[in-house]
Length: 177
Image 1: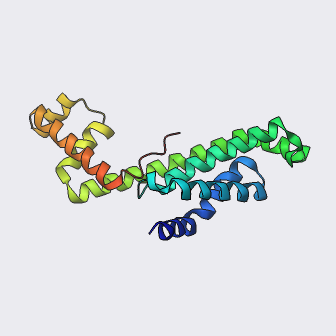
Image 2: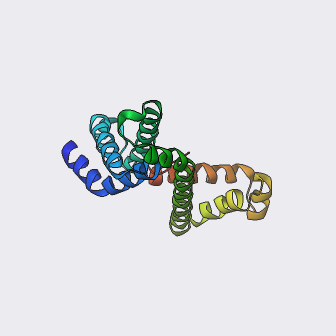
Image 3: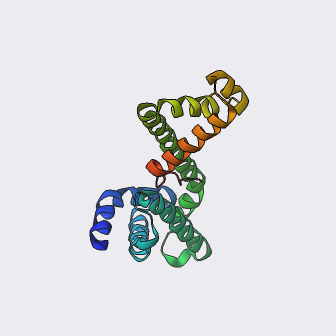
C-alpha cells in the first residue's frame, strides 16, 4: 500500500516538483537532485501526510529544499555552481518567488471556483450563505436579513458549509505562502 501510494505520487508529481525546484535554483541538475531528496523525504514521512494533501506537502518540501540548496551554495560557492550560474540563481530568486506566488494564486482561484461550484451544486442554501458572507462581504446580520433567516440559522449554515469544505477539500487547503 505504501509503495503503491508513493509510486502514484511520484508518477503524478515528479515533474511538478522538478519545476518548482528549477524555478528557484535555475539549474536542471540541481532541480533533479532536489526532487530526489524531496521524494525520499516524502517516502519517509508518508504516514503523516494526509491522503489528498500530497501535492501541497511536496510543494512545500520542494520549495524549502530549493531555498536550503541556494543558502548552501551562497555560503560555499565552490559546491558546484560557477559564478555566472550562482549570480543568475541569486538574482533569479525574487523572480522565482514571484512565479511561485502567481502559481499559488492561480491554484487558489481554481480551488475557490471548485469549492463554490460544489457548494452550489450540492447545497444551494449553504452556497447562498457563503457567497453573501465571503464574496459580497456582508456582515452576519446583513446576510441574515437578506436571506430572511435568524442569525443563529445563518451561523449554523456557515458552520455546516465549513465542515463540508474541510471534508471535501481539506487536503488541498494548505498552500499558504
